Amino acid sequence: MGPSGDILVLPVSYKMDEAGVLVFATSSGGVLARLAHGERVSVQVDDVSEELHNGWSVLAHGHATIYEGDVSPRAWVAGHDEVVIGITLDRLTGRAISAYG
Picture 1 (cartoon, rainbow, N blue to C red):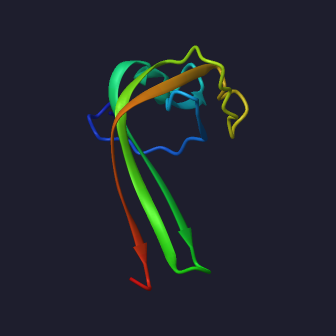
Picture 2: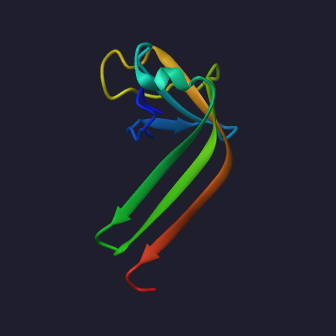
């Protein structure tokens, strides 16, 4: 949550490790770095194909901690690779949609 208690929704570039841990990097002074102490978090991943007229959305829930594994996600912004966070997932929900049923 943000300083005012609001829920934050922020984009990240992520990778999955072999154990199914979702991994992303961030700056040490950023709001996302504060999640790395076992905070309960959710991550949403979506995809859509205009050509195929379908799409899907997955909502993953888990706990965020400092990641010490072998996966190295690539940060989009320079300097946002100082802290690597892993989210151990414990619940997945989602749905797929299609214009063709």
